[in-house]
Image (cartoon, rainbow, N blue to C red; front, side):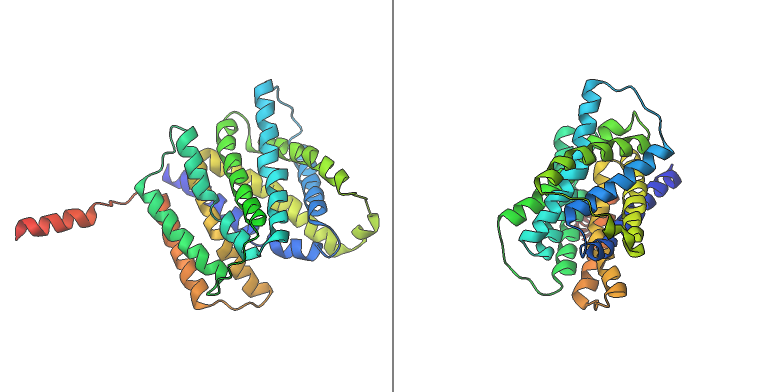
Length: 306
């Protein structure tokens, strides 16, 4: 059983490693496309790939189909649009920090709406240590308090959106295969994005796709970062639960930091190094049960013996 669980932990960690590096492809593609266009093309590639791999259609109830619509909105269109808009309105460091609160939001929602994922003392301690680590990694010793209110609110909204996606995914994911669930998510994500594209005056420009690097980065985002990673993430949520899987989101700033160092030659400082260590400790505490009464027992025994 432990070995099986380890596989799903590795799936979640691998997914976060990929998601932490997608900024490179997105940054390059932003030279030609808007954030909304990038997401739309990425989702189209994902959906077409999944329907080729798994073309089977299941009979679903009206209630289940409604749940798939919500998954497509919370985990697709709403999350990505809220995140990209927040990045335009406020500092990227603020957005990154607030999005890192998604595991806490997930735990709070799961505590209220589920019976088997209640918040423990270990979880709270792990959250506290990890969020301090995220702060050190993202702000890297330089904290700039420049709030735009709406930008920060959108970032929190994106975190809430992902939290609801993960909780709903666990409730629905037990009945259907991860591939089918992921396919439905992206189908409704695409549908809900079309009105937004129309409102922004979208026009298709085929000349933009004549560059090989554009195709390469779109394929990476569509096939690896979306199709593969969403399937792995859905499998992890199904077997580990929403709270434990979302704890891996804390690693996202660490992966981004490492990728920035390798690709953009940004220096890893003492602050970011210490923050990374705290994140690892916090995630470990949140994922594992520890005897929090150890010191109390030790002290009590010492007093008794004296």
